[in-house]
Length: 385
Image (cartoon, rainbow, N blue to C red):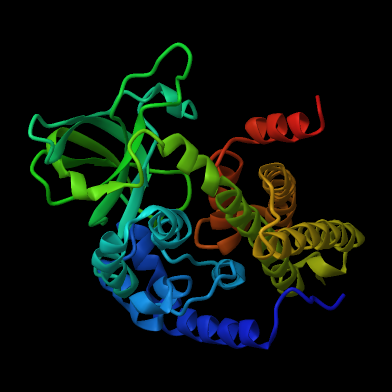
C-alpha cells in the first residue's frame, strides 16, 4: 500500500540522510562498536548537516520545523542500514523538547546555538541506582545556597545515555523533600555543566545492545549549579517529565517498527543468497510463510506508527495513545526480529551480521521509556479498568 504520511520534502530529506549514512557512518561503524561510542567529531558532522536544529526555531539558528516526522525518517534510515547515530537521539528527541518548552529566553540564546552545532551535547539524568521507574523515589538533592546564587548538588544517577560525552546534563534532583501527600513534588531540573568541580563520570556501562551509544553512571559531590541554570520552575520537574512522555514513547515505537522492517529486509536478502541441500533457503515453503507472517506484522506496525505520527503533529497524541503504540510495536518487533534471526541459522547469532545487532538492540525498547507492564497499566486505565 502507498504510504501517505511523508511528503516530497520528507522524502528529499530521506535521500540526504541515506547518502550521509553511506558516506559517514557505514565505513566506520565497526570501529564505533568496538569503542563503545561514536566519536565526538561525528556529532559535529550531524550539527553541520542540520540534524540537531530541525525543530529549533529560526531565531536561534534552527530550521523551525514542528513535525516529528523528520526524526522518524532518521530512525528508519539508520535501522535500514543497520547502524545508529550513537547517543545523539537523546540529545534531540529527549533533551531538546525540555529546552524548547521550559528554558527562559536568556537560556535559549545561551544554549541553543551550541546545541545545534554539536558543540554542546546533552543528556538527561533521571534514573538512580535502586529506584528504577520510581522517579518520585529519587534521592539526589540540590540545596539552594544561603546567598541564593547557586544550588549544591549531591547524589548519583545511572543508565545515562550520552553521559560520557555530554557537555550539559539535565539532572533531576530534589530541591524540597517529598511529603506523604505528594511524593512527586519538590523535584527540579538543573542543566549541569559537566566541567563543574565535583561532577564525575563513573563506569561506562557495558550493555547487551546499542553498543555505539555511551551509557554511564554519574555522581555529584557538592557540585555548584548557578540558579541561572535551573530549567523551568523549581519543584515542577515531575510535571515536565510527564509532558514529554508521549513523544518519547512515539520515538521508541518508530524505532521498534523500523528495526522490524529492517530485519525482514536483511532476512530476505540472506535467504535468497544462502543455499542448503542444493536449494536456496528462500525456496522452502517454511521460509516463505515465516517471512509472509513477518511482513504482515510490519505492515500493522507501520499503520500504528503512521497514525501516531499524524496525531502527534496535530497535537492530538494522548499518553494512552503513545503507550498503546509503544506496547504494540515493541512487543511485535521482538517476535519479528526473532523469526528473522532464526532464518539466518547459526549466522544469525554472529554479531558481524546486522540481524544479531538488531536482536540485541531492540530488547531495550520494552524497558526504557516505561516498561511494557507500565504501558499496559496506562492503556488499561484509559479503558476505565
